[in-house]
Length: 507
Image 1 (cartoon, one colour):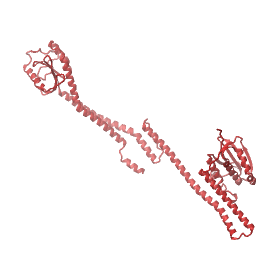
Image 2 (cartoon, rainbow, N blue to C red; image 1 turned 30 degrees about the vertical axis):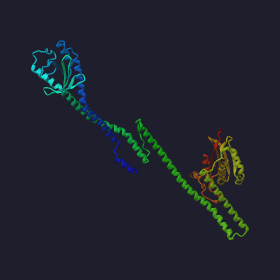
Image 3 (tube, rainbow, N blue to C red; image 1 turned 45 degrees about the vertical axis):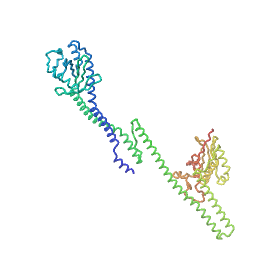
Image 4 (tube, rainbow, N blue to C red; image 1 turned 180 degrees about the horizontal axis):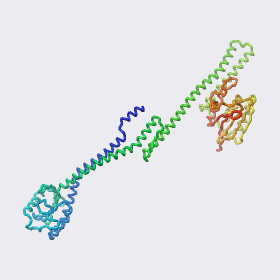
């Protein structure tokens, strides 16, 4: 499944490539729109700007006092037209009074010389007639404006296309402002060429920028992708190191957190699986041992019952002995089954503890009074070391049950000295009860197994010991149910078995 995902991802376009193409596409579209807008709109906008300038010049010229000396008003007109790309022609009664252009075949005066006075015979009459025919003929094709002037495009004598803004004033003077179209067209063309070149440069620069941005932007994404892929392959050693200060960094931190949680969960699951395997093995061993322990008394009972039934034990004394043996074996079976049932209840959690405020010392003394017969029968020498500050919170019945198992264990496995020392003293938040019995040590490699069902430190499993190995298992189950600890350790002269009970806390 992982391989198929890798093959599929190999056929996809990388996000860096797509981001690069998106950026280039957006830049190209924007620049194309700018270039198209410049091509379509720059001409009309520029011409309208020229038209506005020509209109403004015409209005300024219209304010001149043409009744003044020609030298005066021609100087004023020259000032208005100075530095402009357009030309000014002033006529009255079909006669050109002033012209700053030779387009109409008229002589242009030098900037430092005044125009000839109106009516001066020095002017070429033929040129005057041509100028008059030019304005009177072509003006009819111009478009009338709101201010009463006329505007449009006409062709001059030399074939040059001109923009003309003309108006006849109230005093009969006609003012015409002209502008060649060709410079405007060339300016627009040059602007378009320049913009096209800039567009190509911008696209190239944008491509480099887009490539760098796409790589920089997708680097943390690629790192996150690789980390997630490693997690999918259960490789928890790979971490995301993303420091972008944005959502990508938060995502990387979440991926790292997810990896840690997943690793912890898998480790827990593995541990639980191992524990489950061990529990299954232990359960099988428990069943096998229980079957073995039950099979022996059953075989004995069956054998003696057959003896009685067959009539071999004719004497009353013989029958009585057989019946006694059968009863003893039945009692052992009953006790074993009871312990097995008790262990099952404790491990399954169905047995409830009745905790109450009690003195550990008083509980121990009460237990010794009840078990005085057992202690005397086994010649145990009991020594008590009880701390007065021993008030705890525990189940008295289970407390005695744990002590009974420890004392029984001491009676079975203790040496000939039969020394048993019971202590109870505070240990932090608990009261620790210890039972020491003199005797040989438990091998360290067996120490952790003594709490398993049917285990004996003495490998010779003889019936004379009268032990079925469930006592310590029950102790461990009781302590687990109470949330307390228990254990054993070798000490000089013997072995100490201990268990904790909760210390009483007022309030």
